[in-house]
Length: 529
Ligand SMILES: Nc1ncnc2c1ncn2[C@@H]1O[C@H](COP(=O)(O)OP(=O)(O)OP(=O)(O)O)[C@@H](O)[C@H]1O
Ligand SMILES: [Mg+2]
Image 1 (tube, rainbow, N blue to C red):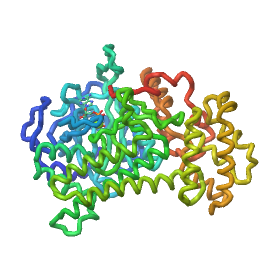
Image 2 (spheres, helix red, strand yellow; image 1 turned 45 degrees about the vertical axis):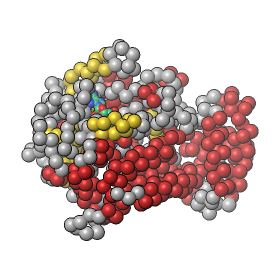
Image 3 (cartoon, protein in one colour; image 1 turned 90 degrees about the vertical axis):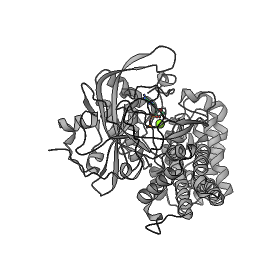
Image 4 (tube, helix red, strand yellow; image 1 turned 30 degrees about the vertical axis):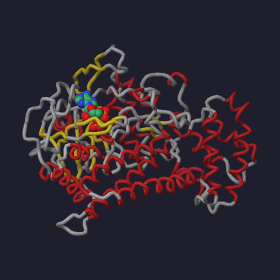
């Protein structure tokens, strides 16, 4: 059995390559990417693979057990006839233009044709130095790689657009990290995730060209992206017009909006929504200091680097996405020359977000079609209640099906009480507000067009039972540090069916335990990874 792919190097063949080949960190002008090979590692070991990704890439289920798989996805051996490369991009970090960033530790192994005939790029994250590594080492550690691997697949199974993960490999190397930037660096095990996506082009990939007035390159990248990733927008095979560019931006806005509505639905906080971490395909990309809401709090961010400003907190995500889209619009404006349509698309983003999120919340409540202002208030008031006492968002919504239009009002507490972190507080201060909310909810359910069965089924498709809770990932990481990788496999398996009841895994449907409230890696994450 050998690992063979059909290669189709669209990106590297149609865009300009860096003429210099030195790996040394530097500014790379007039190029969309630099050829660079992964750095070999000493003692690689496969810790986990996504069997779905094996299938979708046309590999056999046992393929991961081969020496060749290990060597390729650890970066020790190249895929036959391939020429790996790192991509050049820039970005706005925390609202400020940061200049050239680029794949400082990601290396695209190859563009391949998958089992369905679609293009996929295979990319190693943590595979060594590239010309974009700046002052860093090009590596990734086990803890961050476990988080990236598991969350990519968990998001996919939740039905959320995302880059995927094929494999998680321990490199055998030790990597120095100052996890909390407190001057106490430690050696940690190194690891590499193989990510997969139709394209890894980011908003920042366009921005870098505009910032350098490399207009021809900017046009080439836009046209490449439209031709291969948005082919339905190509009306004329040969010539792309400003209208096509505008339609392209409009679609990026729409896809980004869709992604954010999903994040808000499941309580996902990306944590570092810089424009270099925004995929032009509207995929969730860069699983760094992300987190999952436990106690519902729109101001929460897991990213300690963002602790003060809370720019990337849960509730800010829609508005930050729009700000990022504005930066992309500014870039496209340099080749379109008029702003009207771009502005229109940005406004449409806001309208679409309002409209789609309203219906998404209505689905979470199982009330049927969103009926305007009254429903708006019902939803808003519920979130005010949830925020008034520490309430686990996932458990609350999942258990809300236990309360129906036929329920006695007083039973509301029994239905959802498992979601409350502090029962005393809810008894004394907040119960009345919840009770009056449930009175209105019951009345609303009575006039819904959904019958009980449809309602429950809709709610269970909208409100996941199992999410990759921060502390669950951390337990898997702690075990992995002791050489036990079984919990990674277990979580991967549970997260395959996040909307299903899995009675044997009921303990994974549980509030964050007290020990995890302040533990590093659970509620607080840095960008050190
Ligand atoms: N250990 C590292 N070595 C080299 N470059 C790094 C390292 N960590 C981050 N970078 C670079 O710093 C910039 C910002 O990092 P960020 O945390 O957004 O990305 P990342 O986690 O490395 O990767 P990605 O966005 O590809 O998932 C990127 O250019 C990234 O490649
Ligand atoms: Mg990044």
